[in-house]
Image: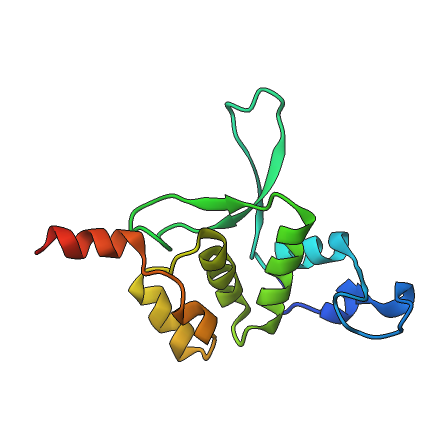
Amino acid sequence: MRERNNTLNPDKVYSSEYSTEGKRNPHDCFFDREQALSQLLNADLVSIDWFEEDKENNIYVEVNLNDLFVWGCSDGEILKSLSDLQSLYDICATCNNMNNGTIIWAAFKRREKPQKGFVDILKEDGDWSKEMEMLPENHYEDFLKNENK
């Protein structure tokens, strides 16, 4: 059985060799998408998936979001571009707990806060930010509050 790696190594993902400035600024550096995807897969932050109804038999890179926005809901977000891959990698690599990076990335992608339990985890781990605070409340929790009035 292959051993999982619980860290991300941005030094292997970003290379200033291709930068005219020689800086380690992600916007000026070469982003090695294969290395980034490999690290995210190895850390179990993304998975490879396919859909049986897809007649072209495409495979997808997906972030598991089960129960993040709605309890008891099987859910995921497909990475649709190199920009998605890079932003997910960067967020995960800068979090105190890299697993929280998937929560933060998905919240910004969906433009809403996760459920309160996940907000509490992010705060406890020191990964909560002003930007997260400014996101709209979780739609599901808002719905439940209105239902119980």
